[in-house]
Length: 310
Ligand SMILES: [Zn+2]
Image 1 (cartoon, rainbow, N blue to C red):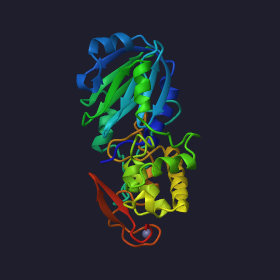
Image 2 (image 1 turned 180 degrees about the horizontal axis):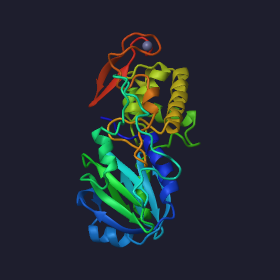
Image 3 (image 1 turned 90 degrees about the vertical axis):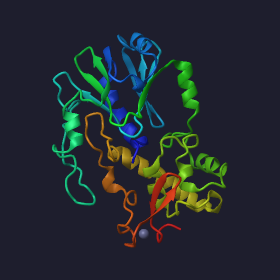
């Protein structure tokens, strides 16, 4: 199972920022109370009638700033979606037409995202039984918070609580503060640890998850179970460069559509075509043509090339 990571959440953020910034929330439909981490009456009172002044991202979370100083914080977890529809109910908005079938399944070669797939049917028929929270804007447009498996949530927090959440997370890898020196310092603090799971520790580097940690290790030629203390300075530099490069490419490609991730328009991301090892165990390594293997790391499966990664 894949969870939206930094590039996927960043994609949704950029699109939503254009679509809903300065829009006023007329009403909210809460169809499943447990997806909202606030008492319902308080939530409705503080959210309805408010203008969204900014849409931001922190780690894998989306944040909507409200005019009254409160904030909505979303975590999509495994299968959450935030889908925008204009007043006519069109799939498209902001000049971005929806294109189905753009992404090929890497195993079968078949086009994914055809109108026949169950996932796309869910996107066309909105709201549906997975639309647990719906934001209705004054201009008739709507934002659907869908979640098949119901692990996602939206919190309503004030400034103080938001600061508290912010402090639980580490450096943002696409920000200027993420220098090589900073990267090294963070890793060497935990130098007895194994590298790939360490890249995913949110209190060190924020937003990197299972997909991009695997890809960064492959890119740098580092086997995912090496301990930080056994990695040379030159290799760390390579890993740092790889991580930034991969995350930037993934943002450009609008993320990886594993499982239910789609962008704000209901489109799949295109990054899956650029992934080298993720979910490719048993296939040929794109670099050396040897067979890609996998290892268990905690509850996660990590794919790697035994020849290219040492
Ligand atoms: Zn290889």
